[in-house]
Length: 284
Image (cartoon, rainbow, N blue to C red; front, side):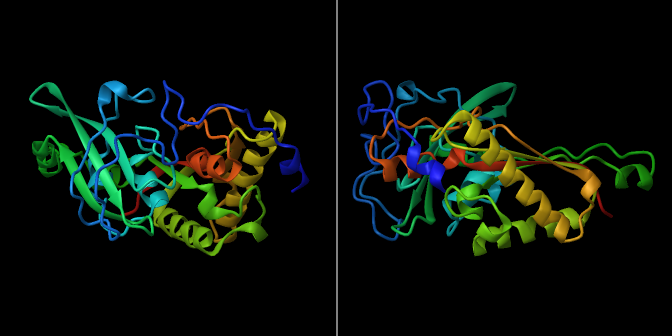
């Protein structure tokens, strides 16, 4: 699109002292990573104290965490756990997280590392301390029985899904004709999942990176969310329950300081997304 020609990128120094750049400038990467991503001569965890983006970490969804396994792509891992917490970019072979768990009335802070192969598919996973892996075995207490089966059938099941727009559309594009094959498969999977539930409302919120003007990015975020809405409607989902909006560049999840354009675009990929919020009830 012609707008992209006029985009301006700030001339900031690579790997600024207070914020590690996302594309290969990290000093805490592990040593001797095998090409298949299944081993390393030394696994190195970054210091939480040096994390300038998200040192407090997150409380993960245990079901999502249990779904993490070998072969996942970065967009798939992003959908499950969100962006890495140490400013590691789309081309990095390691993503690190700070994950919090409640245990015996206290909060247990854990570090979780995912190592990718050279094709950037997740292959090996590490915990610090190692005992944190046991948190995946924690059983969730069963909910007390409800009065009737009808009430159970109408139990709300809110869901939050993040769709990486780079996996949906060609870069800087937003139309149905711009949907990539993998993007169509993602949307088909989402539509099939929604078709199995009693949907009350689906909110689609588009987001962009900071490249380009605020006005352009606002329009692009709305256009992408609207395209996802149109695609879901084309599969038979009711139009009066699907709503699309955009927030432009205002809700970034990563900050990047690269000056080389191609590297910067890759680094900012997590910001280019469509957030899906589903309200409804499980089908019997």
